[in-house]
Length: 274
Ligand SMILES: NC(=O)c1ccc[n+]([C@@H]2O[C@H](COP(=O)([O-])OP(=O)(O)OC[C@H]3O[C@@H](n4cnc5c(N)ncnc54)[C@H](OP(=O)(O)O)[C@@H]3O)[C@@H](O)[C@H]2O)c1
Image (cartoon, rainbow, N blue to C red):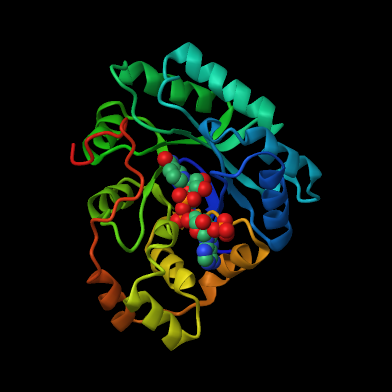
């Protein structure tokens, strides 16, 4: 399995399994199946209400916990020091583990004390409850503040990224500062595969459009992907995306696609240009 490393000890498979919006037995089944098929990177969050289901799959699976990279996140309304600590404790209990491999602030807070939240994030890492830390959905200005002014030892950022959304400024920044970028919603929930250009490239290589969408991301330095897939067929075909070989002509065609199609933009989202 192709791995991605970044500063402060992050070392994770470049393809992970996204688990939202699966919950309960459906989630346990899908995660267990993914581990059986070779996935070793699972993405969850308190907000997905599925950590206990993921934990059940981890317990049921013969794959050892140390072999699996596990990411979880704290929701944006639990960013005071006490609430954040409690959130991670709850996550660890639900997941049945003493440490997660990567712990993210899921979204920037509202009217929050940024420095105190970041101090707490760093303390949880120093205490060993999270091996590495990161932030998700932070626009560039805020990321810069956290990394440079507050000096937080971030290993990764997680943001929406796919062939229909430009994230070049964040990607450049992540690379310059030694962070990995985890691309969430990497298939744009099917929209990338609907593009005729992507379908033509897939046909040329005897691959699936979804594999072209993922390989375009995986070919970029420092980028990991976490497609959500529940069926065995989709989980396997996403893993096999690594075998697709894109060429410069394919990349030029994909570069020319519209890059303003943001799929995830809830009312509590930050100003993306800030
Ligand atoms: N940090 C954040 O704020 C944030 C926000 C959104 C998502 N995420 C994370 O990112 C993960 C993925 O994002 P997402 O679920 O929004 O979107 P996505 O991965 O782009 O798309 C998921 C959809 O694509 C389908 N699919 C997967 N593989 C396929 C294949 N090979 N062929 C055809 N269809 C396929 C899935 O169907 P089946 O399930 O039927 O296979 C599902 O309907 C989430 O599960 C979550 O872990 C994080």
